[in-house]
Length: 383
Image (cartoon, rainbow, N blue to C red; front, side, top):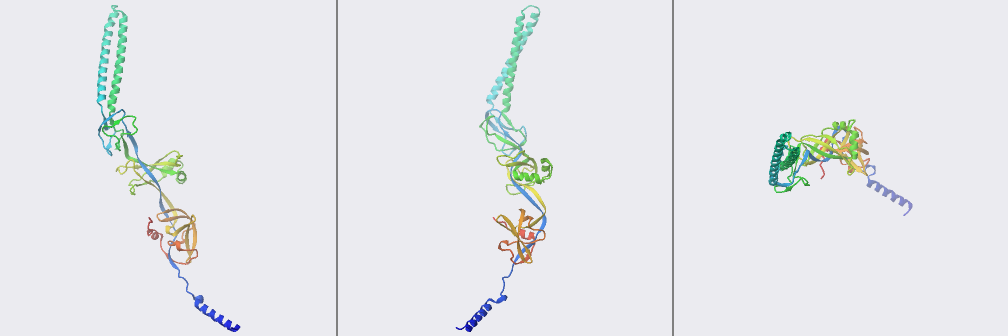
């Protein structure tokens, strides 16, 4: 093949290739539609949550003061009792016998005192008239003093035994609700028992205890208004209790106290919340979750579906002239499917609301404008 033939063949091949590629008129991939929202600001109500244990404001163990066998159980678990109400009786046969014997001892001692007094009264005038020796009178007086001492001893013994008889009747120490009855009829009980017979709890008002770690507590001190801890506690808004069944307790509580120091074993500090309990919904031993409200004023928000994380950083895509740009953001928190933005975006920015995982910087899209609440209302929980 000569030189001219080669050039002609190459030119023909180039023409064919150019025609097959379509030149500059080749169709381009169509931009895909993406929902977008405008970054706006709003007030957002958030909650700090802490697990809690609930106790009565006053919980008293019910114990026997003397040793004996339970004869009668006069209350039931969950029953309301009044202070002084009889709850249990112990076997008193031996105590009654001792009391009767002691009463007889008092009567005998009193008779000896009376006899000794009569002897003194009889000898006194005889000594005055020098009829009998004064030694006899002094002896009679000594006998009287001894008899009086024996009477006092007998009376103290009787009083002690009577007190023990009274201790055989076990009464409610406070107004409240009876807890679990650990010991029943026939059980031997005493003052040194490790396990109480039962417990009575005052549940008209309840205490809910929860703990903050050291960092949370320091944040609490700096972020809560007030010059002292007492003032700060007064400025904390009423708190809520989510009960074990997930239902919100009808009454709101107030943080009433904080323990004085960080627990060195747990690194936490304990708070106490007071809740009214007039309807008796709660009781000693309940559990739940404390919710402390916290309001963010004029905070920037975007839907939670509009962000993604990479290497510990959070990103969103802004949109300008249908082109997406990557924006790194700092978030304050995530609340109710919203991201609270601290920096990286400004009010009025347009951001992609969903589908960000399929995008790359400088991708061209078809923005479909929507509103934040429309996006968040359609977010389904992932289980």
